[in-house]
Amino acid sequence: MKNKIKFIQGNEACVEGALYAGIDFFAGYPITPSTEIMEHLARRLPERGGKFIQMEDEIASMCAIIGASLTGRKSMTATSGPGFSLKQEAIGYACMTEIPCVIANVQRGGPSTGNPTHVSQGDVNQARWGTHGDHSIIALTASNHQDVFAMTVDAFNLAETYRTPVILLLDEAVGHMREKLIVPEEGELEIVDRLRTALGRDVDYHPYLPREDGRLPMSDFGGEHRFNVTGLFHDMWGFPSNNPKVINELLRHLVDKIENNVQAITRYKEHCLDDAEYILVSYGSSARSAIHLAKSRRNRGEKIGVLELQSLWPFPTELVREKCSNAKAVLVVEMNMGQVLAQVKAAVEKPDRVFLANRIDGKLITPSDIKKLLRVIQGRGV
Amino acid sequence: MKRVRIVFSGSGGQGVITAAIILAEAAVIYAGKNAVQSQSYGAAARGGATRSDIIISNNDIHFPGVIQPNVLVCLTQEAYNLYSPIIRPGGTLLTDSRYVKTTRNVDARQTELPMYDTVMEQIGKPIVFNICVLGALIGSTELLRPGALIKAVADRVPKNFLELNTKAFDLGLSLAQDNL
Picture 1 (tube, each protein chain N blue to C red):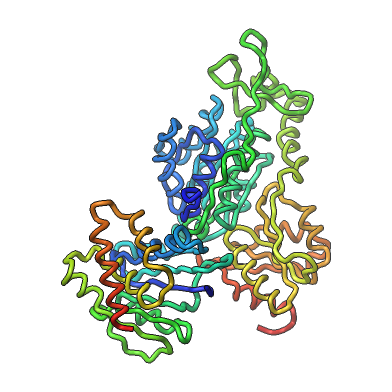
Picture 2 (picture 1 turned 45 degrees about the horizontal axis):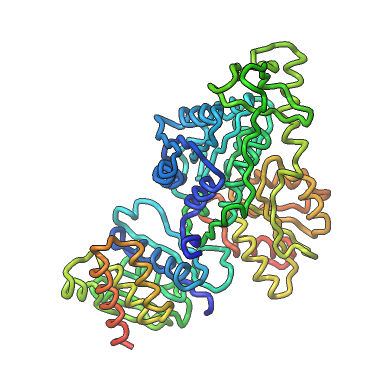
């Protein structure tokens, strides 16, 4: 048991989660504050027969994990700030070709090179819309190391289940902070392995022909079957097509396969939420401050609760509407100019009762930052 | 055990961060407690003021920063000037008497110990200064059992250097105990 208890950085908890989920391949290019993810995988992956490559840049890293995944390997990259921008075109390629992969983005201050060593949550919308064109995507986040581990495992699982890139949206505060992680026993968390085609070598395999349940079994590229893969709209053989029917159906499929499964993808936690009059909606490291405040005010009889979102995309609109329906006011606690705020406002019945508690100066938002705003909203002065 | 909030401060290269990590690690791995450790990142690794925050508790810890430390360790004058005003009333302030001249009257138990000079006299290697500080901290606060700290030190330092580190830890421990 003793070696299952670790005292490590959040970035290392992500590595432990990736190893637990069965990562085979990592390609990356170091950038603060995500570097420890690749640093630790550089040692850990080869130890168990996996492959690690430091590529020439972030674009190549993203392309490398797509290629590796296509050959049947569970693949991941990690980056931050401008590195995440560089990966966007290839993320779109993975969306279009439906190749499972995990992209950890440990957020730092932006835009541009911004504030490399300090915390921010400014990439929420970039995770959703960073690559061009209509598409859908899954983005997960976590506020503590046990959840970083679990969400990393989930990221790999969801990537395989929905054949999509999954963004693991961490942040500098959680990534660099050290705290306890208890590594779950083997079998304790579910691991989803790739759905592979049962077709034999001599049978025609259609890489983009859905089964009755809508899923697309994969065939390891370079293995049993010959097939084409392209970023252009493509037919069931994977060949380029500009047939309007093909384009229409493929684009709808890319969006629907995720948007029709919001409930199954949604991950969240409640803290003191029953009967809460004031609800703090938060995620990542800022949720730690929200929970701190809610628990300490509860001790004084104030009905404050926290809805901690662990999946940001697809946005859990129904969940937020339901949980916030009886709140006197909702505060969205985040370290950006209101990226999740806009989603929460769109979700609830009374958007004028939704407020932003933010901090964008590179410092972790504190419980007293939130408390001050809450007092104003409650009409109690600062 | 109540929640203890600790700030380690000094300058880059003194081993401030390493000491903070070892303390928090000992609390989690060898004392069954919860702990979080965070630090300011930046040019401090190459000199300049550096700070690490630690919270140790039997309960869950959410906000990881320390606003008002119960325990403040200052290893440079700059760190002392900057952080001594934020100490929680009645807290413990540990300083190294070679590097810090205490000038304020803060409401704290002030412990000034010649940790650096003792390490240089008895061991002659400044690299174990931070471990001596840990010993002094444990000696003056009884935050954790010394055995838990030694185990955490052993996990981090190469075998050949364990004896040196243990000696530095014991030096700090007895400096503090003699001072009580």
